[in-house]
Length: 215
Image (cartoon, rainbow, N blue to C red; front, top):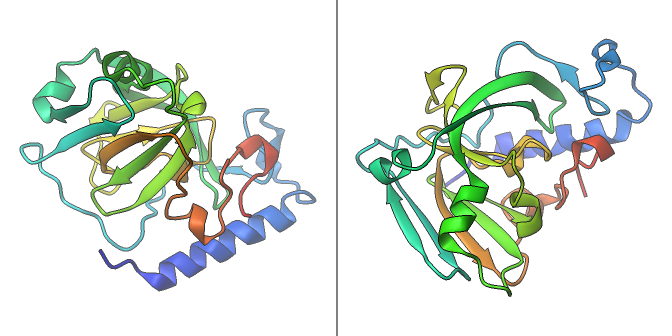
């Protein structure tokens, strides 16, 4: 898959710029204690991608979960919908400095997925791969949290293609690039494997409350 290099370069510069200035910048919205440093509130949901939005029909969509797990699985849309569906609310923080608060979702909890596949003791990291060939990575300990979900609904509507539908990851305690859109494969491994933005200088840990954006 070819990515839009101009888009990539612009997002790299923006993330680095926000890291450098947010320590001394005071946003009016920062009075809201739910906002990490350097963030401002938006009421819409900006669309950010790498210049390609894959169309994945519900009939074609599958999710493969493999690697260091006792029970690898491949879900179809019907399999995914047959899992326990849970509504929840979370905040969403983009590395480019905007945040949207109290977004409403419906999806399958990652902890439920863990209970099914049962990661082996040597599994320490998770690599997420998308239908546009995007990748991102996190420690398993971060993903094993009650607010990490594979979601299909946002604000009572099916997740649109622009925002990663049919299914995307939501990981509220990290900047949003860690929540892969158009999720296709989840791989458990023993070693950390940096993803698309991580190898291009973005933080490997991506902690919003630490202004942990770039490098």
